[in-house]
Image (cartoon, rainbow, N blue to C red; front, side, top):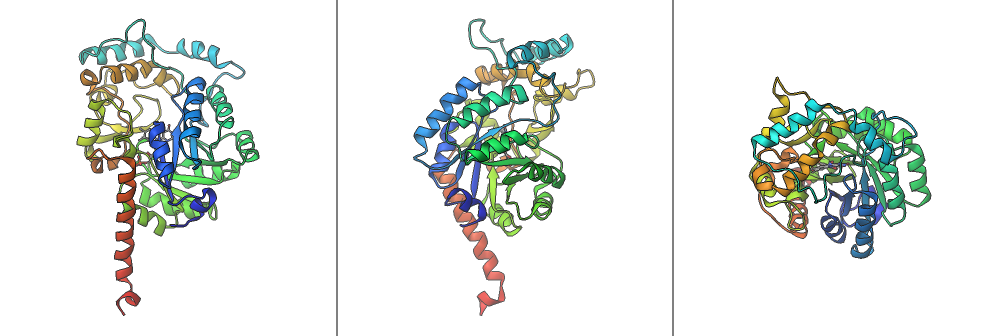
Amino acid sequence: MRTRATELFGLDLPLFAFSHCRDVVAAVSKAGGMGVLGALAFTPDQLEIELKWLDDHVDGKPYGVDLVMPAKVQLPEGVKAEDLEGQLEEMISQEHRDWVEKVLAEHNVPPLPEDGPGGHHLLGWTDATARPQIDIAFQHSPSLLVNALGPPPKDIVDAAHERGIKVAALASSPRHAQKHVDTGVDIVVAQGTEAGGHTGEISSVVLWPQVIEAIAPTPVLAAGGIAHGSQIAGALAMGAQGVWTGSIWLTVQEAEAPPAQRDAYLAATSKDTVRSRSWTGKPCRMLRNDWTDAWEAPDSPKPLGMPLQYMVTADAVARGHRYADRAKDVMFNPVGQIVVQMNRVRPVREVIYDLVQEYLEAVERLQRLSPAAEA
Ligand SMILES: Cc1cc2nc3c(=O)[nH]c(=O)nc-3n(C[C@H](O)[C@H](O)[C@H](O)COP(=O)(O)O)c2cc1C
């Protein structure tokens, strides 16, 4: 399978896999696609460890790093990351903190132990906290730097290019995609609303061709709702140069997840997801549960914006992971509508093998439709 995306990176498959787990990233890269590590939740020190590990474990294959630098978060300028966190904490109302405690208490989710590590509150989704991550990324060997929520700053695009690193950015509308291209990105990931995580409102099948046409000849990766090889064939038929996946890697053998969370993904259907601002402050697709419902209740204080809402909920994420059995109805379970197809735990290699087989079957089906094939 050769496309402009495979040629850019020397890949065997036009398959990009977003994951927070380094084992998944390495396994996809070694299988011929490109694993991309979601760096958002790592402190710079942790990211240093993860990227060193990847450099040592991808056998020289290309991998990527994904950051979240939202274009629309307004923060005081010139404040250092350490001071910024304190200032932002002061902006959170007691009502919001009490609401989190109330919802968790109703489900008997205990607090974190006093002496244990707390939740990481201010993630890498501000300029001040993402730039130290980028400095770390530049000390390692990623082939691709990706930005999630908005065009990456121009100076970062230029600095990546100087180091021979390609830059991609996620877009949920043709307008977003054009902004990315104007900033100089090499690849746009067109992500439909069915995707897991932060997502827009336009469905993949409507969005992909619009973006492909709007920014041609910039290569587009199709994202949102891909868990079957026929969907890859559909995306390539529309003109995408590859596919970008996220949800399917949540239930692979190599992924780290509390069993209660993995079971929730394995059991869920497409109707069980919802776009909710209840964890991060921006619309994010996840499993609907008592937590997402609580933040929709008439007496709820309503979610704050990004990054404040996650600062209120970070400990709840950590508590959910630590006490997953008790917290199973109030956990943060980001995932897309293709969760319905995630019903078996398989190793990464098997998932990729199946995707390729299904892709080939889809292409054969199309070939049988053409009169030339019948003759
Ligand atoms: C658990 C989860 C977390 C995600 N976090 C991020 C993120 O930090 N940065 C990002 O660019 N995309 C993130 N995404 C979106 C993925 O990069 C990808 O676009 C999406 O999963 C594709 O749609 P799919 O879920 O239907 O495969 C996340 C997706 C999931 C499922």
